[in-house]
Amino acid sequence: MNIKYRKEINNMQPYVPGKPIEDVQKELGLKDVIKLASNENPHGCSPMAKEAIKQELDNLAYYPDGNTGRLRSNLSSFLNVDEDQLIFGAGSDEIIGILAEVFLCPGDELLTSDQSFPRYDSAAHLMGAKIVKTPLTNYTYDLNAMKEQVSKKTKLVILANPNNPTATYFTSSSLEDFLDFLPDNVMLVLDEAYYEYVDAKDYPKSLELLEKHSNIIILRTFSKAYGLASLRVGYGIASAEIIELLNRVRNPFNVNSLAQQAAIASLKDQDFVNKAVKLNKEVKEYIYGEFDKLNIEYLPSQANFIMFNAKRPSLELFEALQERGFIIRPAFGVPNWVRVTLGTMEQMEAFIETLKEIY
Ligand SMILES: *Cc1c(COP(=O)(O)O)cnc(C)c1O
Image (cartoon, rainbow, N blue to C red; front, top):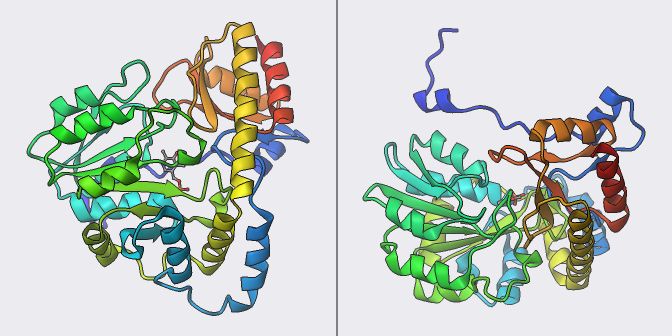
């Protein structure tokens, strides 16, 4: 092929998502397949979200509200921030891309951690930026090590809290210490995709930090605890000035109407979220207990997934589980460890039985 294209693309690969349930069923001739691979909500979403989508079906011929007005006003009251402090995206994924476009030039540096969310890399690669990563310490973001990597070229710092795939978190005091150090002209992204699941008392109250620091954006999503992953809707919270910069780059109709209506309804149904979080906690306690009995090493989780030591190459356990109808995720970049999403109690009991069989 003789076509000329940007050299940045050379370093990039298409994202390889987990296989859909139907593909695994067909390939392996399995009747039942349980997907525990993408940290989706095993309880689905709020019934109010489904109802809101039905109501919206007559409007499919119209473009969505490009300003996400009603969702914006609902979320601004819910979070107690100004409406102009919010940006919505087709998943928080899209906002990560927008941040890279706004803040990274070729040769600039994105600072993040090893064994974290791969989307950060692709966003930075596309802009021709350099990706600087520090290793995890005790499977946790090491903010002290990151301080030492901040340079004049650092334009964007992304911290996942809790981290994916480890489900570990860093504390409020370590974040404040990091913020005291970070020059205030460097943009800091706090990716809090699993925020609703967190119960650690010393987890950062990031919204309060926004009042003191103008260089922070917090990313959250309707994909995980709210159970709306298929609709693609996430959001960022920052100063109005930062949001205005991001809006210059944002596609005008980036959040579709069904997603907007479903998100509004879901936000009103906090009972659904609270119940999902409570069930997740019960399942987590169950898994801790079973892993202890089986002598399986694991990382205490602040999210709806858990990473554990497979005691063999992770791909091997992945395949053994897949043959038996469970899709999990070999943890990115941590050999011998795998990540499993916490499903329903019933699913996890079956999962544990299957693990016993394999071991
Ligand atoms: C799932 C996830 C997201 C993105 O979710 P969206 O569906 O794009 O909102 C962002 N960050 C982390 C760490 C995640 O695990």
